[in-house]
Image 1 (cartoon, one colour):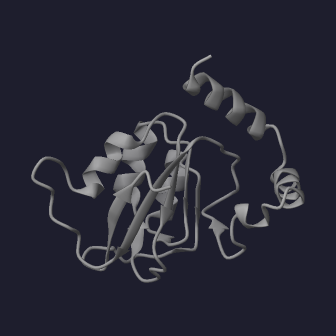
Image 2 (cartoon, one colour; image 1 turned 90 degrees about the horizontal axis):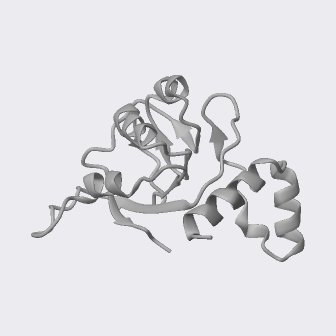
Image 3 (spheres, helix red, strand yellow; image 1 turned 30 degrees about the vertical axis):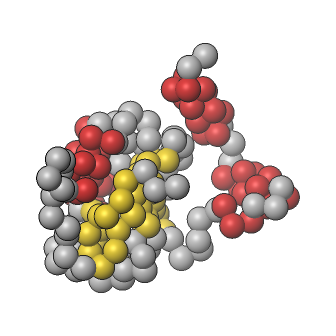
Length: 157
């Protein structure tokens, strides 16, 4: 069985489990820091989702220029979103502008992204709800991240 089939099988099994059960088992195994922070909230009604994590990281400041042989991280990450993945965005503590909005959400949803989890904010929350993209975030606000925060790394471990 290839890795994608294993991921899909494992994710389907996780989808059948209540989140509280997964949390309890992880805690009993000594992984109490492997569940989401209580300060993160659903955007819209809770929807179960599971998938391999696409870990993205950003920090405050201007977006970096494109490398000589490649794309800026904000565009390169779109090519890394795969069917069933969960985009997990670490913001480095950014609390002002949203890290994604409706345009990125739509792009990721068209790639069949299973959901988004971020310790930062998003904008266009209603659009994400309407397109069926499950999102868990610290806040929803109208402010863009342009010039305030930018994606820096893709596939962070």
